[in-house]
Amino acid sequence: MPGTVKESLDLTALEARVDELIRTIETLANENEALRSQHSVLAAERATLIDKTEQARSRVEAMIARLKAMEAR
Image (cartoon, rainbow, N blue to C red; front, side, top):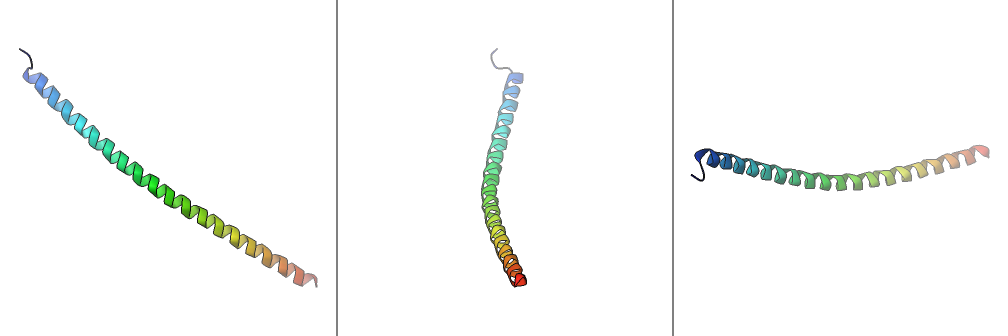
């Protein structure tokens, strides 16, 4: 007798597990894409902040140089 009730139940359980795994993979793929997007935004923000920090450092160093020049007079 091909296809017993137990085999049918096993197949149904396997199908449910495969469906669950597919949903998990889709969820993880969506989360991964969101994290990649967030990473890009944060990397751009970091680059902007580094640039602003360097500009501020240059301005402070210029002010210090001017103050030392005034002091030397």
